[in-house]
Image 1 (spheres, one colour):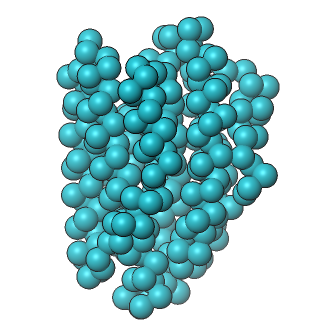
Image 2 (cartoon, helix red, strand yellow; image 1 turned 120 degrees about the horizontal axis):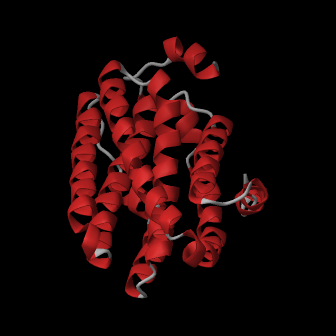
Length: 231
């Protein structure tokens, strides 16, 4: 694998690496913070599942602390303002959907898009991470699959009534992912992560999630194409 080959060349304490890491680390910290808030909001929207959703929220909060420790380990200050801007559009879309009571859209954004985005990024990062960050990230990935599974199971159980809203939410939000991946291409490269690998891993995770919910292969190909022209 290409990522494994570049790993020995990485200098985790070089200025180039640490500069890029300040933004990538901020993104994962902010991503976990967004997830924490989103699951708390979902617990209000799905009161029958409140305890389970609050448990997921707490897990995301622990992940955030783990990634903050990764930054401290490399003596890097996370660029949180950059990260907030990075997530601004997804954040805004989630908030609008929550205000409108659109549980399906909220679950697509958090439990599918954000979780698949995180899983793909963590999977590509683990082989090239410093030892401390690798241990933290490996633990986080195991939890993220549980979060992805929660969204999948709920949407699968409510597939027929959710399908139209899922397609609309996908059309609105998936293009944002391609733009976000392009935005961090240079920083990811500095950390030994290639955009093509990130895109491929995300497409696989997202496609599998859509399949598990009930979409056909034809549906998934059509839904996955939104925004791909920007990749």
